[in-house]
Length: 223
Image 1 (cartoon, helix red, strand yellow):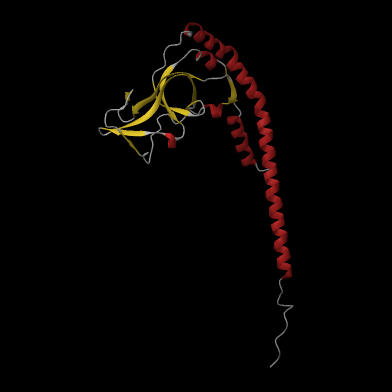
Image 2 (spheres, one colour):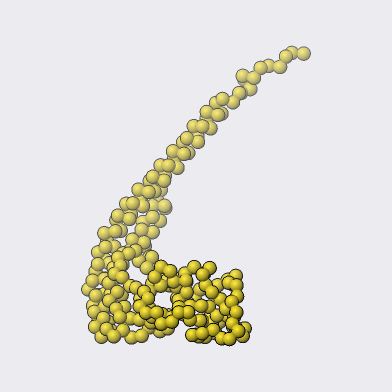
């Protein structure tokens, strides 16, 4: 076993084996809502208009709530800025938004005309989703939760008494498992490399053994 690759595997396992239990965030987000303008996740379905030199995108004006389930996951993946929302209420559809100025309109200005989809689209919230079919293009600040007087202290208590101890315990359990799995995979890869190397060496010997040498070559006829 080579020491440097093994040390690298041990370091990588110690960094990626951390498990985070997250119950407190689910409690803290109970009752939170905010207004949003959403568009289809597929940019090919976006509809564009132009009026008086301003570009508008057809959207749907809705009220959304954060979808924050109880999670037990690798903390390395939880660092992604992904957020998902659920639609609680549809206020108006269609609704129009000018991304350059932030202007919002319930109806298009007079003489507005459709225009082709631009070559490059500016996704304002690329990591945010609303269900499986939409994403927000504009979000308002969330309104205070009517349940905040009990969700905030309960969330803090849950974080200290459940999330932290459970995360430490699960990390301690998963770390040796990840190390054993990584070392096993390394041994299998090394064995495969050695087998390929040995097979290649034997094939080279067989080919070189069949090549004629100068001793076996016929002598040229004497003049």
